Image (cartoon, rainbow, N blue to C red; front, top):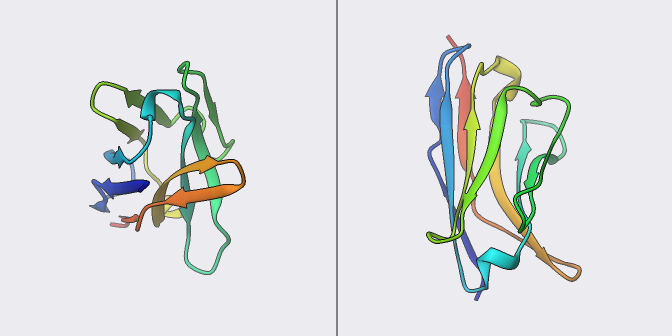
Length: 115
């Protein structure tokens, strides 16, 4: 079955960097659009970055220029490089894909940006 496992979260100071990883299994990864979402405390989940099977990317305005999504089809992995982190980036981050109308996401990894 579809499984997505996120890793790489943690505590970082403002201005710092983190790289999140997502390991995917149970489907043909190379043909699937993948994305990262986040949910900050008390807020709704937000789509922040997307990468198509062909490598095209899109970003939410809130992270554009600071975050970079990438994928390694040979390893079935998708990454989120996060630079210039701000306290408002504090959230649980989820790897996400969708088949038809059925979304799949992992358990998430927590990112806390604080001094």
